[in-house]
Length: 164
Length: 214
Image 1 (tube, helix red, strand yellow):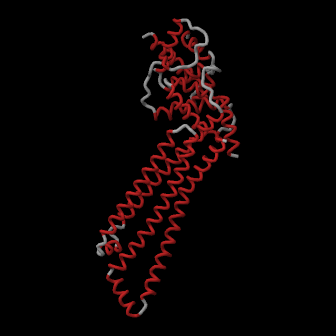
Image 2: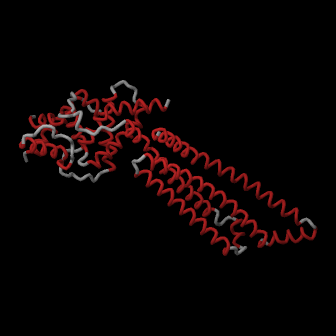
Image 3: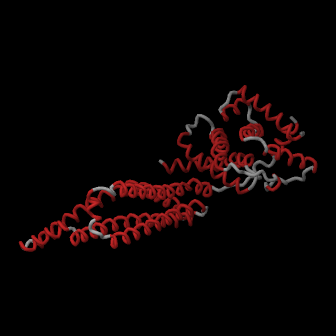
């Protein structure tokens, strides 16, 4: 019974692990912190898995647990995350040559995102993941109207950071 | 907003290849990390248990039998014996703590397994030590009583004049053994409940890890 549960969980996790990696990418600035958060989320997912009833998709549920972990648990433990330069974080992104100015702009953008608070990061993350406001509101447990208002505030804030 | 769309474009790019791909086994190992929390509990419970006994010994410091025991002036035996006991206990705490430290810091299943075995051994030694210490201290106290308690000595004197000395010794030793057996039984039951449950979980983890290794 327990074996079966473990097996199905790890299988689903393996398929959807990108979601966890992406949450880590938004919330951490270096490889070590990334791995740390990845592990933390995995453990939280596993702990919460028996309660996952399948009324939502596994991936949707992962967004919720992953973000919750990043926002609540992780924040408590790692209060002192330093905001290192985002460029130090090596992702395999350079498959095609970037336009220099575009690359520069992206760097600034990622840096701006890293200056947002945890909830704001979650909003940006869900936006980047093409979630609509209904899904955003469900994942974060806020009303749809609230999600819209918050999203607009985040956009304004980002603009202010980029063009002070 | 243009900037966010630029970000989104970059975010979506090579989505399937740019993130690390962890294997089934690597992910499985992660959820087995629960071992570290079990070992942490072993450490915490052993500390609580120590505090409990310390509290008991202070609570009964002024009890009658302790007051009487003080009149035997057996400090030269009891104090070194107690110090030795505390030193050994301190060593066990250190071991429990190190087990926890090592287990929580490792990623390798092999080291994890070795440490689970080590922790199990430490717990067994710890329980063994506590029981042996209890038995030895009971007999030391008994011996002191026979040699220094005035009432007991006069009882023995009158018994030896009656020719019942052997009977007195036999009864006391048998009674002590019986009480000790009950006490050890209770303590063992207590250990079995607390550490047994933790060790069982640890064993389960160990078996799973072993299965992965093959």
